[in-house]
Structure formats: C-alpha cells, structure tokens
Image (cartoon, rainbow, N blue to C red):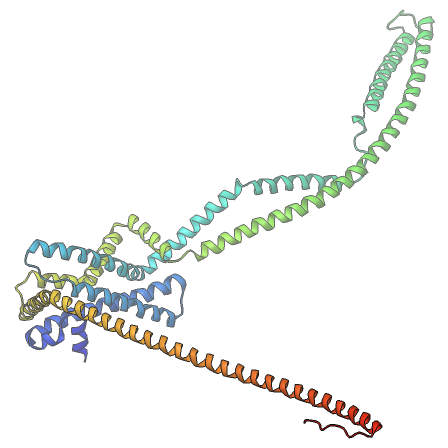
Length: 463
C-alpha cells in the first residue's frame, strides 16, 4: 500500500512499472522525496501561521495539511512532466524552468523553518526594533503642533493661577502716573525744605550766609521760606493721599476683574488641555498597540536581515541552512534531472516504446478520419432527408384531418340550423290554422243567428 502510494507520487505508470521490477526502488525513492518535501512544506506553513497570527493548533494543522497537499501536487507535476528528450539541450530547456520553480518553492518553504531556528535572536532584535520605533515616535511628538499647543496652554494656566493666588490687591501704586508725579514733587519739596532748614541753622550760628550770629533779617526770611515749604508739602501730602486712595480703588476693581478673567481662562485652558491630552494619549495608545502587534512574518524577516547584516557568523549559518533546505525541497526535480542525463532504464525504454506505439496508432486513426467524416456526413444528409419527408407526410395528414373535422363541424351546424327553421315553420303554420278556424266559427255563428231569425235553415259549413 505504501509502496504503491510512493510510486503514484513519482508520476510513473504503475502497470508498466510492474513489468520492470528493478526500477521500482528508484521511483519509490522519487515518490519518497516528493512526500518528504510536501511534509516539510506543510510543517513550515503551520509554523508560519502560528507565528504570524497566533492561530489555534487545529487551524494551523489544517492549513499545513492543505499547503502540504498543494506542494505535493506541484512536485508530482514537476517530476511527471520532466521527461528525456533526444537532444541534451532540449532536455535542459525543459528542465531549467522546472528547476527554477522548485527553487522558488523551496525558498518559500525554507523561510518559516529558518525563522523558527533563529527565533531567540529574532525575538531580541524585535524588542530592539520596537524600542527604536517608540523613541522615534516620542521624539516626533516634541515637534508636533499638538504638543506645542499643550505647552503654551500650560504656561498660560500657570500665569493665571499666579494671578488667582495673589488675589484682589491694589499692588504697587507707584505704577499709577498721578501718584508717581505727586510722589516726585513731594520728594523735591522735602529736599528744598531740608536745604532751607540747614541754611537756617547755619545762619543762626553765623557760619554761613551773612556770617552774623543770631536771628537777623536773613534768618527770618529763611524761616518764612520754611513755613511756605511746609504748607506746600502739607497740601501735597493731602493731594497725594487722595490720589493714592483713588488709584488703590481703581486698581482693586481692576484686580477683581483680572481675577475673574484669569479663573475663566484657567477653566477654558484646562478643558482644552484635557482634550489635547486625551488626543495625545489615544495616539500614543494606538502606536503602542501597533508597535506591540508588529511581530508578524515580515517583521521577523526584517529582524533576521538586520542581525545577519551585523553578525557575519550568523549570516554564514543562515545562508548555509537556507541553501540546505532549498536543496532538500528541490530534491525530486534534481533526482529526475540526474535520471534524465543517465542511461535510460528498462522502464523508460518500455515507456518510450509505448508512446511511439500510441503515436503511430493516433496517426493511423487520423488518416482514417477523413473517410469516416465523409460517410458520417452522407448519413447525416440522408437522415435529414428522411426526417423532411416524414415531416411533410405528417403535415399533409394533419391538414387533411383538419379539413375533414371542419367539414364535419359545418355539417352539424347546418343540420341544427335546418331543424330550428323547420320548427319555426311548424309553429307558424299552426298559428295560421288556429286563426282561420276561429274566424270560420265566428262566421258560422253569425249566419246561424241570421237564419234562425228568418226560419230558413242555414247552408252547410265546411270545416
């Protein structure tokens, strides 16, 4: 049973191979190579499905079985369609495309197996790649317009909070123009008064001015000047107090309005900042989910390419393993190529003789084909003529039957019409006889009455 299955996978003619028992082992080996390639392909497909989408074991095994059957069918076709030709270069033209297809299939099968062999190194490189992508994403957020808007809102909110913490105060009154002017004038008057006081003291001691000791005219003049300055300074102090009071009230009212505006700005800024933070968190969560899920087949192949570029030893092992798996997957076609370029076996000679015999039979049948076609054409024409005649006779009989039926129906209609006319005529004659009989009876009665009055017998009446 197993040997028959392996022979069927080799694409050999089982009935013809029974006559060549020495070649059974060779073709069983080809069938075994096809079977091993399909098993390896199915295992690789199941492994790839589980690595990429984390499929359940049952689904992965089912997909692997289907893929293995596909690979088995392709390899069987490649082996069965590779035959020996009379010229070696024709054989090469036939074999090279099949070998290229086998190499491509082997490369597809080899990739999941290589990824499984280097899985620890690939997992470590995937984590490195994820970290690099995350750092790049975070760096891109720094120059993002949303981040810039969030920073501006944060600065504005902190400034408004400082205003709120300060509360409704007048602040520095020297910033008011009127208060600043009056304070400057007060400073000048105080300076002038201090200078006059110093002159008065110096004049009283006689050390300056007129150099006369005591309270002379100059002393009295300086004293009067001091009194004037004191009066001006007192008036200026009163005006300054009023200006400071007005400025404090005005600034306090403005501070309350600024406090209210700052609180409103804080609320609006916090609401907008919350929306922007939610948007940023959503973007970050989406990126993290995408980054965590990017561990499929393509990502693993990219990680494998990176580690093979960085590590020469790993690259050499990688290519050695890939070439080995591709050679194993291409083994059925390689074996068939070696058989094609080796001396023909008994099975091949018998198969070639059988093909030549069948070709000769087809050529002989092809020569007989024109005569058979002509005879068949004549038979078809004769059959068409017979069918036409039968159809014409059938049509004539149908027409005759229709005419007879219509004639019969017309006769029945005429008979019915005739009977109805006879009945009408009978009814009319009876009515006329009754009318005549009634008039005769009335006439006879009148005559009888007449004759009775004249005593003369009436004449006889005809009935």
